[in-house]
Image (cartoon, rainbow, N blue to C red):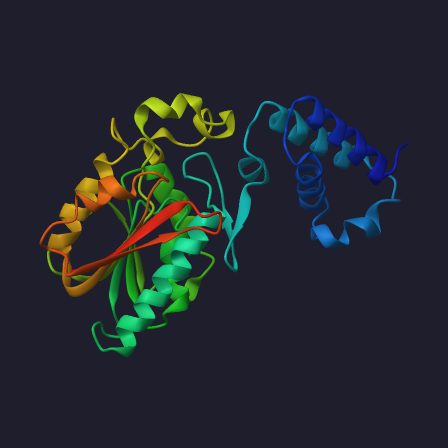
Length: 288
């Protein structure tokens, strides 16, 4: 019989042979999930004998990861800011770059609140909500805000609803809505619209890492032939759905900024842009 550490070492070797980056981190996450402990507590269990359940479950997780299934789908949960969200193939995996977009959005909203441009009980829509990450973060950050988690995908909405169910205190302030972008939203009804829309050029999807191209939902990736089809539509729809001085915040891909600037018409009084921590073009904030 082998120790937990020995079994983990063999698992790491299998991942390295399969060309999986950060093999040690992947195995640590898997082992911690099976043992029901935080990663930092793993060394306390290294010298324990690995039971059949641990060996079998780790073997199955490693097999799936060697086939390039994303770690987040294998674990069925992942962190976003201070939340742990359910992650399944029906919704895009929350990413650190989107956390940065949320922090920039929160700063812009706080500035608008202090200037009296939007009320503290503002209404918002998270468009293309996926796991619900941005909308749930918004409702938790702003205690009087009321919001919509919007997606066209039923599978994504089920995941968002499951994540919402963890935060029962938000039930009265959050609704889950199926809609193609903002079609189901009333005109001039929102103070804030936030979105991580599909923005990958359709022709580039096949060249993405297999974890993304073969496992994450195409609906959440495909931005059309230019990569900007959905963003262009979002900008047009948001101009109709936002109240005066309302904010539209959306994520986009690196290299798309110049083309997006061309889409900003007379409906917008001002706009600002931001890069992520890697220095890549990442988001726009537009004011109605």
